[in-house]
Image (tube, rainbow, N blue to C red; front, side):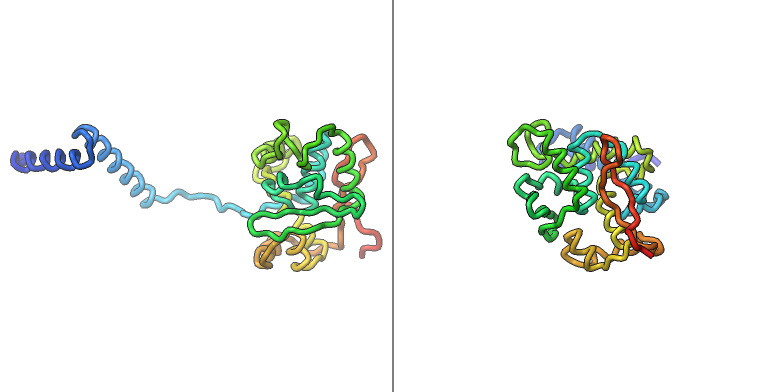
Length: 252
């Protein structure tokens, strides 16, 4: 059946009117209309045939052995102290840049930990092993910058830079691809503390969670309770310092 010439003329007039209202030429209006229709068709096809995606695990944690392997790759004093702080105090990468030299008190052996995402900031004790790491790192610095972990451009180290460094060391340690992002350290220390027998309230305070509901999720990532272990940072007997898993004395 042939198209009605009258209908075609009416349609062309309608297109011309719509193009004029939008301040466009007829050709441009038709191109944009065609693009919009094509996009809607693609969305419809995706909706009709949803792609099968593998379930994504939100809370990925490292095993204690993987933590050891990761730190064994780090020879740079700053990076060693930086990632040890992230693991020890459950820091997000975006919180590392908030740490200042004045937050560290070597006399009281305490450090102020700032938090983002409505987290609860506060002071934390520093173990002798971390104090040793931090002193060794600060002795390599000759600048007077206020940041505890500055970058080469005299600004706080960025989250993007931390993520790139973590990925590099994780690849060297041959960690699984799913565990090559820096937030694994925060998740891991939470899981390890729970495995050691610490209460949810203790882990909540350690991570700076405002609500304990944010801490409960880690109970799903931990396996059966083992006898208490302590992940400490200590000299490895060589020029490097790494994280080792040490059994608590007197543990049963």
